[in-house]
Length: 399
Image (cartoon, rainbow, N blue to C red; front, side, top):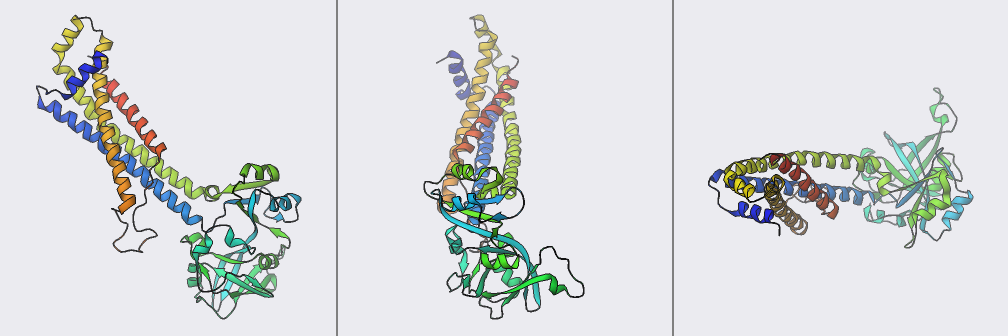
C-alpha cells in the first residue's frame, strides 16, 4: 500500500486538534450518503412508474405495429403483407382499421375512434384481462355487428353495460362535402349492438375514446374494403423483428410498444433526467463540506507537511495524501448511502412501506412502484466519483 494512502487513512480516523474538522468530515460523509440515497431512490421510483405505464399500455398496444410510411392505408392483398401473415416469425397477425366516427346514443353523441379488428384481437395482448362483463368477446355474428366500448366512453354516452338500443355510428363519405340541407346524406350510417362487454385499460386515451368493432364493419363504414390502417403483430417465440423488417422493406414502419407511445416515455425520460441533474447539484453542495474539511486539515497539518518535504516527499505526493482522504470520505458516504437506498427500495418492493393513498383502490397502484436497475447504480456511482473528484482536486490544488 502506498504511504500516501496510509497517511490519509491515519488522518481520516485520528482525532484532530480542532473538533470542528471532525464534525465537518462527519457532515460531509452524511451529506454524500443522503445525496446518494436520494439519487438511487428517485431514479428507482421513476423506473417503477415507467414500468407501470408500460404495463398499462400492454393491455391495448400490440407487441409490434406496422403502418405505411406514405398514406394511411395498407392493401391487404399486397404480396408482402400476405407473406407476413404466413411468416414463421409471426404468431398472431391482426389487421386493424382505425378512423374517427360519430357515435350517437339517444340524445348523447360523441366523436370516437372506431377500431376495427379481426377475431383474433384478444390474442395480441393482455386485453382479455381488461374486459368487464359476462359475455363472450364476439364482434360479429352473421349480419349482427357488436362492439366493445371503453368504460369511460360508456359513461359519457350514458350507456349501460348491456344497452338495448343499438349505438348509431356515422362516418363521412369519402370525397363528399357535407350538404347543409341534408347533412345525413353525406355520412355513412350503421348500427352496433352491445356485446355485453366493456374494456378498461386505465388510460383515458383509450377508455374514453375507443370503440372496438369487427374490421368488416369498419371497412364498410369508412369505405375501405380490403384495406387496413395498420397490422398488429405478436412475434413467435423464435420470431425476429429484424426478419420482419427485411420482409417488408422500407415502405412500412415498425414500432414496438415503447415506440408506439414515444411521447409519453420521452416525457418521463426528460423528467428523470431533470431530477438527476437537480440531485447532482445537491451532491455538489454536499461535497463543499469535503472541500472545507480538507482545507482545514491542510492548515492543521502544516508541520507534518514540512517534515514530509524534508524527508523527500514531493508536492504531488503530499497532494495525493489529501486527495486520497477526500476520496475515502466520498466513497464511504456513497457506500453507506447506496446500501441504505437499496435496502429501502427492496423493503418498498416487499412490504409497500410508502403508500399512494389512505385507502386501497384510490389510485391505479396502492404503493409507490420502485425498480432497481444496475445501470442506474453504475451511473450514480460514476457521478459521485466525478463530482467528488473534481471537488477534492479543487480543494487540494494548493498546499
